[in-house]
Amino acid sequence: MTMLASIVDLEGQLDRYLSRPRVAVGDAQALSIAAVRWSAAVWAAANGAGPVELEADEVTRAFDLVRRPVFICGAHRSGTTLVRDMLDSHPALAVLPAEGTYFTNLKPRLIRQPQGLWLQSFGCEWLRRLSNPIHQEPYWLLGPSSEEQSPYVEFARALMAWWPLAEERIGSLASSWPLVAVALAYAHCTGGFRANSSLRRWVEKTPTNERFLERLRSEFPDAKLIHLVRHPFAVYASHKYEKQLVRRKFRSANRVLRDLGRSYRIALEQSCSDGSDHYLLIRYEDLLQSTHAAVDQLAAFLSIEPLPILMQPTACGLPAPSNSSFTADALPGRLNAAHQRWTTTLTRSDRERLTAVVGESAASLGYDLPPVSPWRARLFRLAARIG
View 1: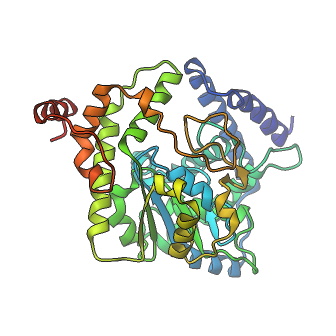
View 2: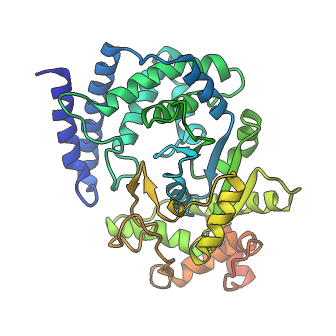
């Protein structure tokens, strides 16, 4: 069996796990093993072929783009994926179709490894993200492999080429240069650096990255920062409902509360600071209720044309799934109205707890939460270990 034929076979094995509506708890380990085997085979094939060749003009255009990132952040389930998907197909933007999670997840993992292993480790991680970015359709964002060629081998070869250049040119200025290398490799594979390229910015989204705003600003002074917030009842209900679907306990409630409280406080601080054309706060509800106005605001903030494609969420050009966990049967590639599912998902205790812990900061952003007595509020804050 040839190397590409082996990759096709391993791709099929992995795809059988991905094609299920939801990966069952017992299948998670088998999926992980299949994904690791597939990504290792892809990397080996790319290593055998060697890095792609880059032209000087390509490199010049690429590192001009590197200076102008767009970082999308906000607490998990606040609408960050929706905004990323709305921007995905705009010709002026190179949008990473999976979360970057560099400071929140990948950097701590990298620094525990010898630096000589970083490229393969990071590359295989991103191969897996391109096949299964958010554990639901669309999968295989670069298309299927065949016995003649594999877009994932080409991505790995592109990453091998851009990696040393990113380290050399911006490594001393930006500790997140490995993420930049991935963005360059992805843009390279999607035709981004041709002479007639219209790209103006590259886009990455990572929930809770608002904790690293100052670091992002220092590494990329020309960065644009988009911060999403959403009603705390909706965020909490979405997390809780996800666990209910797979009949698991909602054990991350305190983490959700802490992330929400911190995100709201940062949003308020940024909104109250001197006006800046590098930070934009968006309420998820406004995005859905006044979509045309929100699209115009986004386009003006990013200095891009407000094309109709911004109204059609996609991932790597493929129709993106519903922006709501409560409308799983909705057609992909469309904006879906907000659902107040918390009326049935949240208990009275849940609501009082949310009001007690994040109600004050949420209210400063225009979210009204029902009152709770002071003594109960104190008990809820003590239980959540949030002062």
